[in-house]
Image (cartoon, rainbow, N blue to C red; front, side, top):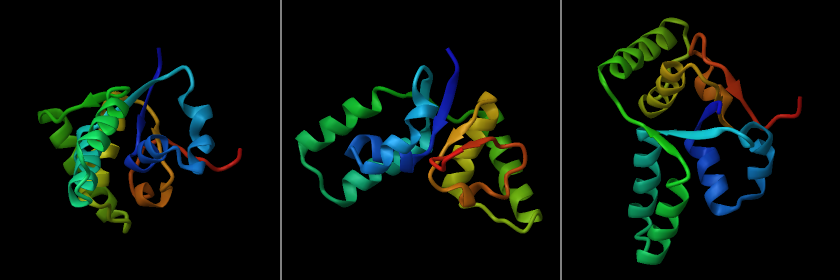
Length: 134
C-alpha cells in the first residue's frame, strides 16, 4: 500500500475532528499514514503545555497509533541538513521542525499532506498534497 507523510497540522485536524480534516481525506484514503517523529513530539508538547489529563492523553495516543512513525537515523539527519541549507540558499528558510517532516517525506520518497504548503516552499523535490481544490 502506498504511504503519505502527514504533517502535524493535518494529524491534529484528524484528531480533533476539525472541519478542515475533510479537505485531506482524498489524500489519505487507501494509504498508510506516516508521521515524522517530530510531529509526535509536537503533538506531545501540545498536550503537555495544555496539561491534558490522562483521558485526553490516552485518546491522543490511540489516534497516533493509526500512524507509522518515521524515526531519525543518520540518513535522515543528512537529509535534514540538506533541506535546511537548500531552503536557505533558495531564500526560503524552513523551520527546524518542518525540515524534519520534509526530510521524512523525502527519505521515504512519498508526498507530504499539509495545510501549510508555504512552510515547505523552499524544499526542492518535495511533493505536497494540500486541501486546496484541484
